[in-house]
Length: 350
Ligand code: FNR
Image (cartoon, rainbow, N blue to C red):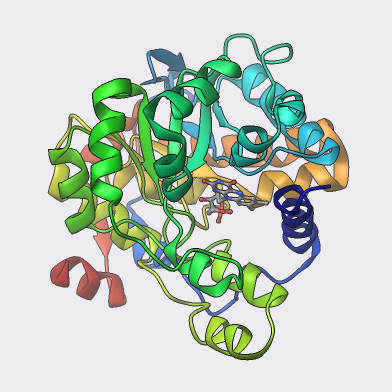
């Protein structure tokens, strides 16, 4: 096994069992309160959450964000969760395709079209791998799995904590400019748990990026994952930065205010319940994104286990819509909400 694939399986083990969501970290969604409507004057079946994404129409505004690929175990995760996304009308992303860029034999572990022929599908590659691959290399990764778009992931915090990680983060906007030119609205730029703030979002949108996934602080911490693998100085500093990032609620609210309605905004990072999905939608996200909880449910119970977890989330989301008297995401966004605590400070400062 090459080092990329071996590292990926070590990551899966840590995420399946380890403490990769530090309890002190918060999305700050607890400071968002949706307001109860005692007389909703609607039926549950009136709720219509369908949403356009990547040229397709989702039944629910939910993206299973990119996690894995490259090993047999990772291939099973991809197929199980893509099947679930196909069944329920969610969008699905594979994890970093670096492993298949390095070894074409691994491509099969990223292939999900047999089980998910119509799902809105995202490929995935790191910003600094994209530099090496070039525009054509990135496009080939997307086309090789029949994806509708590709996610470019940002992970400076993870790289710095990883002993073998990148140390030079120059030239990113140039890469984005080239990729936007080639891929247009098929490009999505995402973080991996430290959040995209309004300043970076504005620059990306000025370059033509039309899909952003904030992936904020409050859920899986990749600094923590790498800290658990590191030793010495890297481990100590990794511990110090395990709570580094822009909380998801702050990222969604401030990025939406910065970029306007033409950008498809995914709110992710620590989203665990249907009510939390409703809260990020109310703050301005078009979709919510989720990684770790569905991965863990799949590891524990396969497709059925993940489906049971998803059913709880989708039911909670529908209840949130009914109890705020909202038939759609657009109506939910127009309802009153209370924002308090330190989230208010974040929103004022950014
Ligand atoms: C991830 N994530 C991720 N992101 C990415 O762009 N490429 C990748 O290869 C991976 N790999 C990966 C593996 C596993 C096991 C997890 C749990 C996560 C990050 C993921 O897409 C998401 O941005 C963060 O995990 C935050 O969401 P959650 O996990 O808090 O819901």
